[in-house]
Image (cartoon, rainbow, N blue to C red; front, side, top):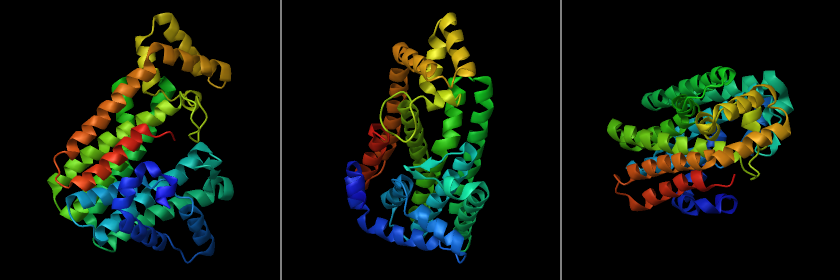
Length: 328
C-alpha cells in the first residue's frame, strides 16, 4: 500500500516493510472502543490516515539506534494518536469541512463529538504508555503537546498584531510543527537505545527536519500545487509566514504599508491576495524561504552522519528530502 501511494519513499518503506505492517495492526487495536459511535469514528479516522510520516520517523529512528521492540511500536502509536488528536481539534478550531480530501470529523459529527474524540485519542495515548511503564517516552511526547499548544496560541496572538520578526516566526513553527517530529525521533531513538545523549541528538534531527517541513508547507501557499488548501489561504488568515515576513522587512515604506493594509483589511479579496503573492515573488521572498528550508534540511542530514547504520541512515535521508521535495 505505501509503495503505491508514495513511491518517493520506497527505500524507507522497504526498510520498514515488516515494521509498518506490525504497526498498522497494533495501531488499529490501540484505538478500538466499546462505544459503538466512537468505534465507528475510529474506523473512519484509521481508514483515512495520511502519509504516516511520523510513525515512520519513530521506527527508523529506533532502528538507527538499536532493535525495534514493543516499546517502539507503542511510541509510534502514541505519536500517531497525538497527531490525530491535534488534527481533529484543529478542524474544530478552524471549522474545516475537509481533511486530506475527505470530510473531516468535524463536518460529519460536529464540534461536541469531535472535541470528545480528540480527548479520547489523547487519553488512549497516555494510557498506552502508562499501562506499559513507558514513563520516559510519555514525558518526551507530553512536552511536544505542550509546545504545540503554545505555538498555536502564540501564532494567534501575533496574527492580531502582524508580527514581522523572523525569530518569532521560527519560535512559532518550532513549537507548533517541529516539536512533535522532534519528540517522535527522540522517543523512537530512546525506545531502542535507552540513551539520553542519542535521544537528544535525534531530537535535534527531528526539530530541524520539522522546521524545513513547515517552511515547505508555507511555500505551498504561494504556488499552484493541489495541496489541500487554496493558494493564499495563510494570507487570508493573517498568518505571516517566512516569505511574507522577508518581503515586509525588505520592502520600501510605501510597499510595506500597502501590503499591511491589504492583509489587515482586504485579506478576503482574491485580487488583493494575489497582489500580495505577486509582490512576495518579485521581492525574492520565495527564494529566501527556500534557502532557509534547505539550510535546515542540510543541518538535519549532517546529524545523521554521526550514526553507523548506512541503510537506515539512507532511509531517514529519503524522508528528510521528501519533506522538502514533496509536491503535496
